[in-house]
Each structure stands twice: as structure tokens, then as C-alpha cells.
Amino acid sequence: MRRSVATCCNRRRIGKMDAACHAGRCRRCRRGAFHPRSKRPMAIFTYLTVAAMQQPPVGALPSPGDTAIVAGYHVYDDDGGGTFRLELPDGAYEHRIDGGMVFDCVRSDTSTRIGVWRRIDQGPVRTAWYGIGNVRAIGTEIAPVTATAERIEKAIAAAGVGEAVIVSGSITLDRTVHMSKTVQLKGEGEGWDRPVIKAGENLKVMFTREASTRFWVTGISFEGWVDPTAQTIGNVARGTAGIGTRTIGFVLFNDDTEADLDCEFAFCRFYRMKVGILAMGRSVLTTRTHFSSCRYGIVVAPSDTAGGETDSSVRALTFHANRFHSCGSHYDLPDLSLVVEIEADGTGAAFDGLSEGDFVVFHKGSSTSDLLEGSVLVVGPSNTLYDRPWPGLFVAGAPDAAAWGALQINVDAKLVGATLDRTSTCIMTVGLANRLKGGLISDVYVDDCRRFYHGAMGEMRIAGVTGYRGYGTMIETPAEGLFETKPGISGAVQGCQWTCNLDVTRSGAAMVIRSSGLVIADNLIVDPAGSGITVAGQRCVVRGNVVRRPRSGGWGIDVNGVKCVVTGNVVDQPGSAGGVQVLGAANISTGNEVLV
Image 1: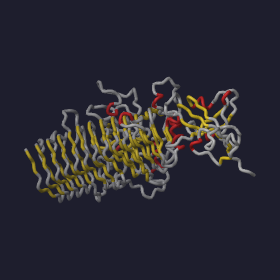
Image 2: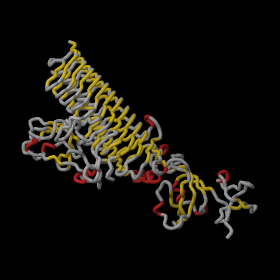
Image 3: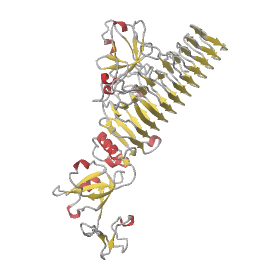
Image 4: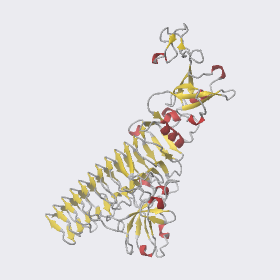
């Protein structure tokens, strides 16, 4: 059988049409080319919107092989248009129609299907192709866009593995986006022009990735939902410093019996979030990302410890050159700084004011609990406490506490007299004692925040953190282990600066180190509310630090550990307590200076 080929009006055989013939011209005689099936010239149609393309007028019906040039999705030139080819696919094709890459085409008079329009534009998939984030449609009279999360999911599904999805404009999510594959979410624009993805009303989680979590997010601003009924004080607006925030930006976990997340965030902004990023696993990187008015910026927790994961340790945490602003201001905001005391009946009624999914710091007080001072816990359903979070606490249908290995803490008489502190924190680790391995927090700028880091240290290094107008503790670590200690830790806090030079409500020492084996060196602490550096661990080295003007009767440097070395430190203008105090067994103190 002779193979069918396209022909020109002079019946000359043409093997194929090159790119120059895309408009339907014969490359030999420059006359109209014919489609081999229809024996008529291939036509080009122009439409103002994709809606017009899907229902062409009766007098100008396209045929398979024809091309459509569409000016916009909703309105002219809103970035959602493009170039399409009409195809007649074999078999059922309704499932292929996704409202971005593939559209239906029916007669406007009879609704009879003519075929499907398939997008033939080159380059990465864009959210504007799915009718969301259309920059030039903003302010134009268009119908409200619905199912925004579903449209983002379809854009992700249409992109190839590891390829980019270009996000533009402003998008408000109606539900959580479940990311189905390895992909890049890449914002179009820079600085204040970068795209914004906002949480809809009462939205708990914006994005989640549940298996083989590799993905990258670049240049996008994420804004959480603020509860309009949240308690406030004076003229402090809701949303300021995280007050009333109810949304988590990303909940990341891997339920494929692996701990790896392998995700990266760069040049992003998290604004008015309860938690910016909650990562349950290892290998997380954030760089040049801004966390503003968040209750917690980044929270890291263990991966699955009950479902077959052989190595649940967390490592490769890299947080570099980020900024944290107003993550808990100096005001006594009840929504941010909430301390509750366990009541005598041990029923947990004292949790009033705490909500499910809150992260709290345990302080023993007068209790006889076995929990270690400074341990971080999570509030579960019905006033329960757990040693770590689990995916199902935040994402419907995800693994529950038992499947994830989260341990429930008995709220009984032994906890009477203890307190739970929900003070906001920039970076927090939960349940990682004895599991946190290598990590790096470096070159971070922090201002107007209550606490910077709280959690285990492991083999992690914190270096080059600059804190200005800090209202609480810069770094606080529990002993390494929830019910046991692990002295063989080798972390470091080096080259940091923490300035608390405002006459406002402040509390706590600048550094509270209960971990063992740490090196605390070359740090500058100015005007701490309590002591400058407090160390209660074993085999720590405190060297070359400068503490200026400690207040409230605090020491400049207070070490009460075992086999610690305290050397070459300077305390300038000590408070009433004194400059350097070294207690405990087999400690060494030498070469420290106190300047009165």
C-alpha cells in the first residue's frame, strides 16, 4: 500500500513539512499544504480564550490536524493561552483532559465531540496554563477560579519527572496540595514581584509530599491563614509575629520505609505561618529564605521508626543564609508565649489554650517526672502529649502515631507542677535526641524573635548566627535523649552574636546547653536577660566567648557540668551574680577575664 503523504496544490509529493511550513504552507511551491487524511489545507484558528477554543462557532469548525492560537486563558494576554493542535485520539480520552495541556473540543450547537486540543508550546509547564496565577488577569472581571489545589496537582502531573512547574501571580488554595512526583516549583519574578500562594480559610496544611519526597521550591512566597477570632493585645494586629496563625506551609515525610526527603527551598518567603516547614526525615536544605511572622519557622522530627525504617537518624540538615523576622515579638502575646502548668488531678485540663499540633518545651518545675528538662513534646488529640509528631496529626489519611512510632506521654500525677512552654521558635527539633547526626546552621540573620534554636545538637554545627533584638534564649538544648543521656555528642556553636539591647519583656539565659561534648567558642552575647552562657553537660569546651552586661542577677558564664574546659572567655561589666562560675566535678577553668 502506498504511504499517504501530504501534497501541495500542484500534486507534488512532500515527504514531510518542516518548521517553516507550520502555518500550512508547502515548502516547495509555497502554496497551501493538505492534510493527508482530509485532503484539505490544514487551517489555523485564533481564539481569545480557551473557553472559545473548546466550543468553536458552527461556521468555523476545526478538523483533526488543525492548529489553534489562543490569546489567553481567562482574558487576552494573561499568560494562559498558547498554541494547540486538534487530535482525534484512539479510544477513551476523557481522562486525558486536564484543563491545561489537553482540552475538549465540541460543537457549540450539538455538543458533539470533534476531538481534543493538545498544547504544543515548548518549555516548562506553567500554572497559568491551568487558569491560576494568571498575572495580567488580576483586577480583570473574571469568574472566581475554583479547585486551585487540583489545578496545581494537574500541572505537577503534566510535568516530567524532575522538570519545573512555573508559578506566577497570586493563587489561593482551597485545600492541601498533594505533590505526586519529583518536581521543581519555580516562581516567576523576584523580590516583591515573586508569586504568592495563599492559604484559604481554615486551611491547615498547604503542601505535602508523602513518598520519595525529592523536590525543589524556588522563588515563591507562601502566606498562611490567620484566625480572625484569635486573641490579641492592645494595638497589635493579628498575624503580627505569628499571632493567630493556623497554617503549616509544607508537611514532608516519606512513608516508603525511608528517611530521605531530599528537598530544597531557595529564595522563598514564609509569612504568617504556624509552621513554615515541618520535615519528618533527613536531607533538608533551605537557603536565602525569609521566615516572617511565623510561630515556628522550621521544625524537624524523626522519620518512621515503627514501619520498617532501618535507619531513622536525621542528618544533612542545611539551613544557610536565611532570615527570621518577628517570630514572636517582645510583647506578651498569649498566642505566642503560653506557659501552662499541669494541674493536681493530672487530667490534662491545664492544656487549655494549647491546640492539637502545638510544640511545647517541658520544664520539670516541682514535678517528679522522668522527662528530661528542656525536652520538646507535641500536643496530640484530646489533650494528649507525645514525644514527636507523626504525619496523620496534620494530613488526613497519613500514618498515625502507632504506625510512625510516636510515643505517648502519660499525663499523670508525676507531671504535677511541670510546665509546658509554647514560646515561638525559629528552628526546632523534636524527638531527635540520639538521632540527630550531621547538620549545619550558618550565616543566619535573626531579629525581633523570642528563641532561635531549641532541640538536640548531635553532630550539628551552628555558626555565624547574628541575632538582633532577641527577646529570649538564642540556643537551648535538652540532654541528648528523652529518658537517657548520651555524652558522646560532638557539635559546636561558634562565631554567633546575640544582642538583647532593648528595655522590653525578656527572659532566660542567651545560651542554655544541656548537651554533652559541645564546643561553644568565639560567640558574642550582649545584654542577656539572665546569664550569658549556661552549661550543664559533660565534656564541653567553652572558649573565647565575650559576654557583655548580663542582667537580672545572671552570671556571665555559668558552668555546672562534668569534665568541662572553660578558658579564654571575657565577661564585660558583670551583673550582681558575678562574671564566671565553674562548678561540678573535674572541670578546668583558666585564663578567663572579668572587666568591671
